[in-house]
Amino acid sequence: MGHMSSDPEVLLGILKDLGGEDFKNFKWYLWHHGVLEGFKPIPKSDLETLDREDTVDKILDTYSDRTLEVTETILEKMQMKGMWEKHSKNISKPGGKSWKH
Image 1 (cartoon, one colour):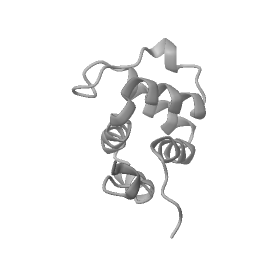
Image 2 (tube, rainbow, N blue to C red):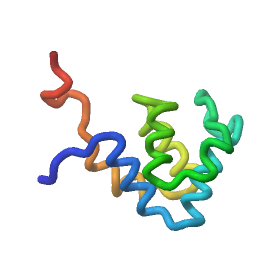
Image 3 (cartoon, rainbow, N blue to C red):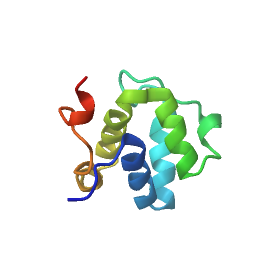
């Protein structure tokens, strides 16, 4: 078994897998009001010039522990659920040792 990925690693893997157009599309969903219900959008000017790595940091800063929820929602809207399935199997699930205190 491979090691479990952290949220940022999973997100970066997904963004690296998106072609240029899809990546632009993904960011479109992040800045549009009302597209992600219950999440505040990230200002377009903050996102526009960011590469994939910086976009990951921005998303984590904004959504913290709900980052992957946002990511899954966007991929669903982009009809790219397969991309989510492919990457999300590496996510460490709560209940692992690291979660118990």
